[in-house]
Image 1: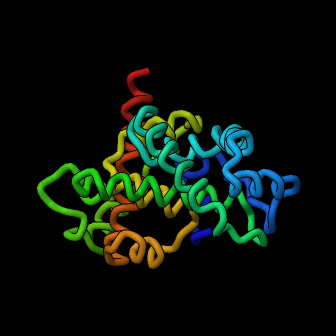
Image 2: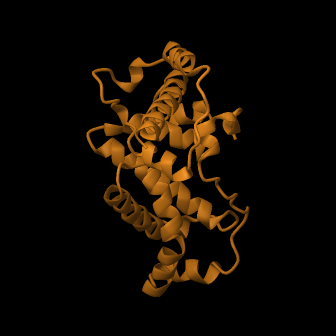
Length: 213
């Protein structure tokens, strides 16, 4: 987990990720064999087992449920098509999850490079370390918000695709800024900047929402 992950009030209100056991989960061998053989019953069972968890993953990368379900369906197609390449010494759930995350990122790359856009004239590449410092400075000394996990998830869906993607990769996938930069084709400073701006925007949205209550 990245340093200081549990100290942010927003991140402490997010649902904690259950650690995925190392090694293949018990009872999955027959289902995997069935899926490789093209058995619809085995595919349906795998779909039912992981639908809820993987929909939750997709929801964090999208702006609404319909978009999340589209990504989920594409992800399951990839899962079944590549099942014969699954390394059975690792966690099957973790493998499925990585496919869903990559499918979500690919979705934004295909949609007019939406994940690269910040809703402004400037592109994601324009932001660097100074922007991160400015945001952190703006956030300093703010009071802690009393939040529910549902409040944070709802606000996350209102972030721009770029902010939302970096926030998810850092917080939920526990990737370093170097890993995020390599995955998205950006620099480390940009990754740091987008994480800081995502947190700042979340705090602004949540504070405004609470004032309206």
